[in-house]
Amino acid sequence: MPVIQLTATLGAEHALSDGRLIPFTASPRVSATPLRTGDRAWIDAELVGVRGAWVIVQHRDFSFEIWSSHMEQVPSHLLPEGHTVGRVPWRLWVVAAAEPIAWLDDASGEVDCTRYASEVAPQAPVDLCGFLAGLPRLAPPSSRSGVEPARPRPPGARNDLPTGQVRAGEASLRGFTASHSGSDAVAVVFSVEQR
Image 1: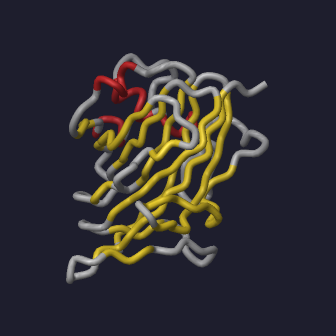
Image 2: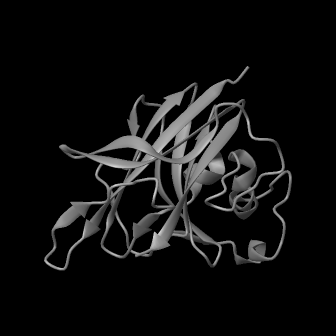
């Protein structure tokens, strides 16, 4: 029986040249959330049995950033004020765990894990980069993100469905939703493209 459940929705606002923000609307015709510098990303999550949740950014050069971490709140606004994009991500991960993960809680700034761009992540990580490189093992398979963990897709796991709503201040954004459940730690991943 699953112990923890995670459902997350990624919404975005696109920055205009005059400084205004307009909502991006996810739809079945779009395969990833388009972002560029100055846009704002929002993530809401529903968490069950979770003691910690994190928003992790993966860049194409295999460096990572932790944008946010939270203890259990249902629903949880993992990016409650939105996050203004400084460097466009390649993937956005949401990780939820039954117990706090010290590596994620202690991390700050950008983490250079470029050695894992050409190495396989260890089954049992011994450092933060090993854990981050192994995030695909915590997520269900996603044809859109190209992430294929070495285990079958669990029942009820979903990726990148343009069905969710995320609160952006007083507004509501239609974004991509993903869900997953498991026993210790789980992750969902959102694909991002440069707009």
